[in-house]
Image 1: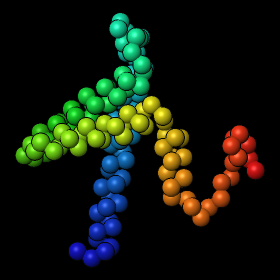
Image 2 (image 1 turned 60 degrees about the vertical axis):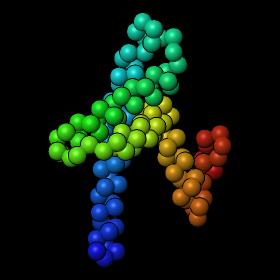
Image 3 (image 1 turned 60 degrees about the horizontal axis):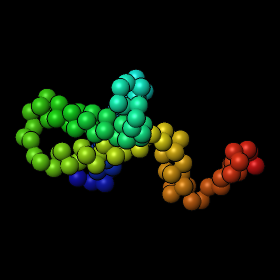
Length: 122
């Protein structure tokens, strides 16, 4: 494989990963918003509920994918799903704007910030 093929594969899988995280975060957000006022769920923090929902959804999604693709089940798929559920929960609780801000903080070192701390334009 040459560098071009490797980059093409990485970009395509990266796109799929971001799409899956976005869809899982959306489903987690909807389920959390609908159920957060039910019974005992209104007594626990919403962030904790969002994490539990994202954990369940992410593990179920991985298990369903393994079943449909007829892959052999390996224990570290569940470990990967649990790690992925932290990302899904982070996106659900903090929103895309926080994730974008962190991304730009670490990747846009050469560009200047166009807004000041109060949110106004410079």
